[in-house]
Amino acid sequence: MIISRYRHPFLFYGLCTVIPWTFWFGAAYVSHITPTNDFLGAVVGILGVLGLLGPTVIAFSIIWPHPELREDIRNRIIGLKGIGITYGLLTCFLMLASILLAQAISLLFGHSADQFHFAGKSSFTAGIFPGWFLLFLAPLVEELAWHSYGTDSLRQRMNLLKTSLLFAVF
Image (cartoon, rainbow, N blue to C red):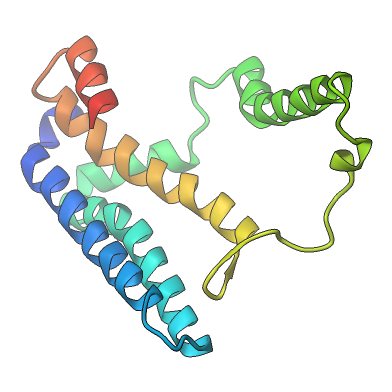
């Protein structure tokens, strides 16, 4: 079974704690340097994104030397085997539907219908990166790390319930 090849949970979770937080503490430090300028803003954004990418880079660096793990990840990323049309549609539209429903309910409490209009620009940025870029990048790279090597390395040592509970705490 392929899950038996995911053997280094302490290495993975240790590095996934130390490396991103190192970048993020660096970004926090640089963000408080005064006077600030565009260069420092770019450094903050880059350090933040590097911290975000850390777990994915760590997962792929542990996976890369093993051809069977690479094949497993490739099949997970591009394979749609086992995904029914119902789950595919729920994945794509459940979040959108819940946001629109929440906005519709807020109309009942007197909020403006202007909230349904698209804004001309992003309402926040992270250094040089617009908010929408980070809203799409963050869950993508996080899922690639945690649900590739992360959960499988725990699952290799524990049953599904214990894995889920430990992952929820971490």
